[in-house]
Each structure stands twice: as C-alpha cells, then as structure tokens.
Amino acid sequence: MRFRTRFNAAGGIADFWNEWKKPTPYRWPILAASFAMTGTLFFWLTKEEYYYPPEVPQVTYITTFAEGRTDEEIRQSNIENQRRKDELEAERARIEQRRRDLYKSLGAATGLDVEAMEAEAEAERAAEERAERERLAELFGESDDQTDGTVETAGE
Image (tube, rainbow, N blue to C red; front, side, top):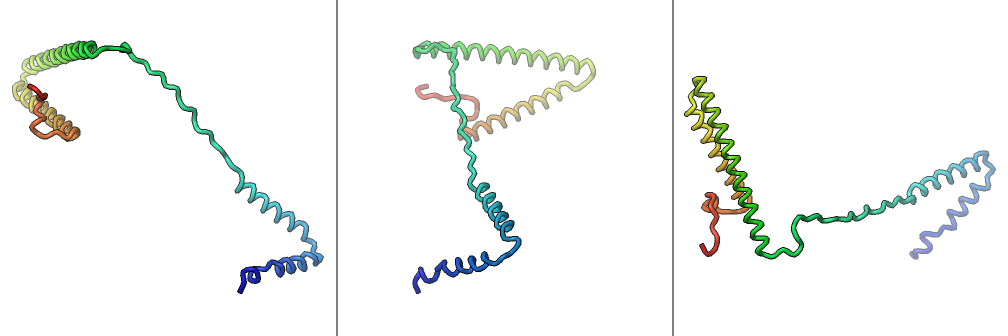
C-alpha cells in the first residue's frame, strides 16, 4: 500500500464541504469561535520573551601595596606584620591572664574553690585546642605527628 493513497485528504475535504454547504444558523459563530480559540492558542504558544544577560560588572582592584615590590620588601613587610601579630596576641594573652587573676581573687574572696575551677577551665581550654588542631589536621590532611603545633621546614 502506498503512502499517498493511505493519507489522501480529498475525502476529508469533500466531507467538510458537504457539511459546510448545509444551512445551519450557528455556522458563522462556530467558525469565529474556532478561529478565536486557534488564534489565541497560536499567539500564546508563539510569543517569546527574551531576557538580556546581565551586564558584566566592571571590577576595580584596590591595593595597598606598591606595584613593583621586590622580594626583599615583601619579606620585610611579612616580618613586620608577623611582629605586630605577635604583639597583639601577647597583649590579648596578658589581658586574659589579668581577667583570670581578677576572677580568682573574686572567687577567693567569696569562698569558692578557685584551684579546682582553674584546673577545670584549663582542661576545657586544652580540650578545645586539641579539637581545633584535630579539625585543622583533618581539613588539611596532616598526620597526627604534625599537629603538635610545631612547624618543620626543609633545611632545619
């Protein structure tokens, strides 16, 4: 059986024409409703919305370092920053020790067992430091022998 004979539209067109020639009072309203529904469907399916991509932001880099610093200037800057950091940590440790001493004197004045409380606080601090070292070791993939707080470098 050939493709052309299986799907011949002549019979369908003839049937449509026979029905269209019959005088029915709703022929034109039905045709108008059909066109309106089909047109609405095609309009809805074919309308396209296009969203433009956002503008590429203009990045302005702000730097506090000179453009052509030498390695020696960078090294000296790092040494100075490390010295400042050590001073700040020492000051922070001094303030914490002063605070602990004040609380110890307050606790001793009120009759609390200051030595037991200090031992308990020291144990908590040590546990927190150990947990932080373990977390960092796990995060950076270091072995347990490298997490004792010391740093070994080549050539030492």
